[in-house]
Image 1 (tube, rainbow, N blue to C red):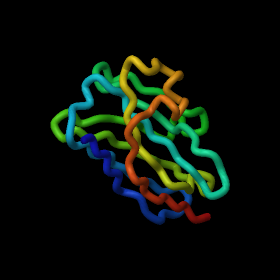
Image 2: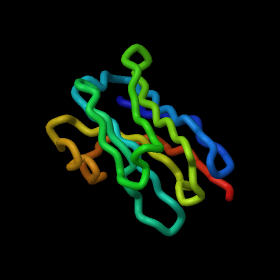
Image 3: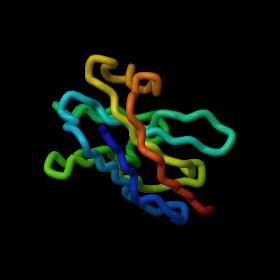
Image 4: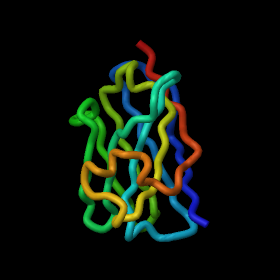
Length: 128
């Protein structure tokens, strides 16, 4: 049984940085992509970034390009989301999720319906 566990959320001032982690257990991520999504109160869940494990290709939502970086650590089976220049509008619960490579490609993976396993989420709050 695959498990994804997020960590690293917290409270930070605008302009600050946080690094989120998504640790996977119970299976390899080689044939998958991992995405980060976020959901603010009263809002729909939205795509933030994704990375294909096998080739390291990355994709970002426009509002986070240049501020967020998604990466992976093969040895630790972990995906990271480095967030810099944080804004109050980045405040949300952040989730990581896994999608098989055959389910979507590139920006098709923005659709959360492609993802089969999800973590429990980690809260990020950016104060102004």
